[in-house]
Length: 409
Ligand code: HEM
Image 1 (cartoon, rainbow, N blue to C red):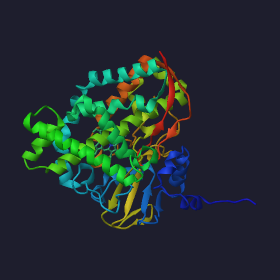
Image 2: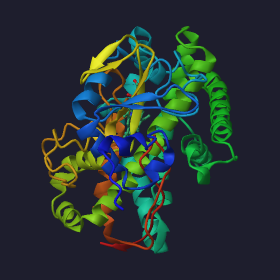
Image 3: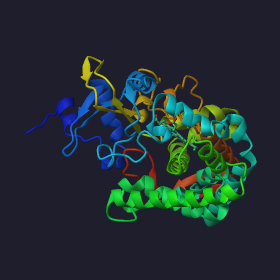
């Protein structure tokens, strides 16, 4: 007996909110089916009202750019707090719209300009060198750990977090972000695990702000204290900001670096090409962001009834924007599944678009450029010891483990 499924029948059986789906590399095929056969797709859910998914480039871009129709104010990812309420709603940068969003962004904007982050370049380069040299010395390593300090050290320097606390913050951000994956939880419940990690991060910020109140410095935590003094933020709002900056900048960049090594191991000719011509570093970073797409989706809520591809989205319904799918859309990217570090037409959406475009874009691209540059300088090749283990997460495209041996250049 043969069993045939139509594309619709296949898609109706898949829950895109299930983190396990993303633990399998095959999820790319599911999203190709969605792009081709159901570009605006309704995903029912048992205990919640369900949500729409947009998977084509043009729709992802349009929804993200139209902040007036598609609001960020409720929550911005699928997950436990979607309907039960998110503490950041209407208060945190990512969870606000319109003038309040602009006001919040202006509080920290100047710390993230290309010129401001360029000042960190020598320091970030030294962190990468040290991590890679240690990994080369150790022989076999879990590369997910090797690159863990790169983003923490970078954002910690901007925030003003002392070096002795980096390891603690790394542990907390991993638990806060990775709680959908049961291996990374600090308690059996995803929600409790994330809540405990966030609570510690908030309290950490509270303590640091008390210190900065007494002795201000040139860092973001001091800017958050000043914003409170000017009545632009309350204390909790400042703590949420700190939590957001740490989380936003951490797992995304870390898994961008991990994903880049996997992409180069799978495409050794691209690795040789980059090593032979570092002039390709900038296009290589763009291609890594497109191909890896560390941020998989963001969520918006429709403010009014609206139509997309003849499908009616009602006011109050949620829409998931799948960046990584947009970045593999054959309608925009030639040979979209090919990893090509010299790709020139690459308007990827890995860092989002519209009013919430990644605040840390200049920092993230600099970190990845320095990472690839130092990798070329120090590492000749990498050998996979075990198949990489993917993270079960709808939010981050990443790995729990990547056991490799690095061989020197
Ligand atoms: C490869 C690394 C990174 C990726 C893939 C990434 C991706 C994204 C994406 C897709 C958004 C849009 C969210 C939305 O539309 O709701 C975003 C926003 C944001 N990112 Fe990044 N990001 C990265 C690195 C960073 C870094 C290093 C920071 C530094 C703190 C950062 C901070 C933020 C913040 C604060 C927002 C919110 C902006 C707003 O709501 O106005 N990100 N990021």
